[in-house]
Figure 1 (cartoon, rainbow over the protein chains, first blue to last red):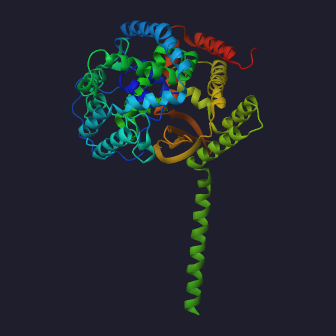
Figure 2: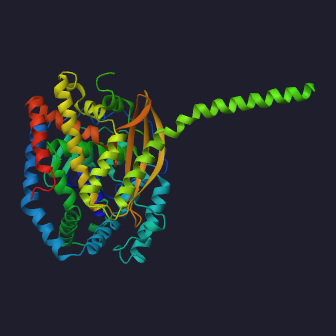
Figure 3: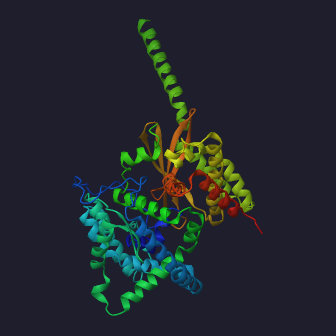
Length: 270
Length: 207
């Protein structure tokens, strides 16, 4: 289950709607009050954060083409691979694999906790890493959660958002899925601060990444199947889920902005 | 004597105040939080019944949910600015088909129920007569909790659910953006056609 957050963090399109249907433990932020003190928002560098309901998508025609490509890739490559994996691997093993890869995100998590002034989260995430790496046998198990060190999903895109940087236009990345200018930039920083480049070289990171992706796809196979089947415009569905989900992550527990609430619940100015 | 009667008056004054307060707070039994609590309890109770078929459970849950959710308002919010241009029969038809779609889509979750519990974590005034209630669906093995927020509005004195957000993704917002895309190329007729097709295909027990 834990792998899901990575998909969202990496902007993978498969994961976004997982938020919509019954999704992940990982995505759930802890219900503590916002631990960091939010800075005064900087003037928006790009476009201001769009309300989740009026979706601006200036690159829509390009995005839809890339989305189409991604979907074909999913249908013909990823989904069959995930089915095979699911056939061979028991669900418990899949969970362990997800845990393992999530544990490796530790430097990214901690760095971004600190950049957002969430010291409590940072302490908890360092603790998580040590507990899960030792007691949890190299991260395959997650005893830390039951010890109260819950998972937080943080990435550099969120950090930028937290500091008031606007999202810029919605962007569909080839293979990696839904994103926006800000989060795509954040992805580069996340990759640079990930643990793998320092310890392994050659094709291993690539192989590991493949296992990670296929495993996550397998874990969420049912959810994805259902989302595809029940949506009316799959592209719009994924875009909307991505925008809402990311805004929710950046705001943590804070309520949505008044403007977006107004648009959502009083659309006719009533 | 004077002291006694003064005490009597102050006591009865206190009593009256208490009664007034009680009368005021008695609708608190129907506060948004309690509404969500009762709905969740009722649904979970049905899910936990061992001797019911999945279809029987679905029917029962549909009955419960209809008492708590204001589908006409939800439908109106989903169509947003497209709503006012519709005539009454189209509005009614859309509301019915949309409700059907929701019950088919979410009804599938009945089979995957795995002893999850609902915990209410907070509620707040959202202004302009709306109220929100924050809940968590607790996974039995710990971890894996899912955040579900309800938005309620008062309809002739009763709080009704008008939207829910799973992991911060609002249902109204999600359908609105999809339906806008559909209506932009084909209007309400195309949307209704798609809804009818999906609902027909989604009916359980086709075989």
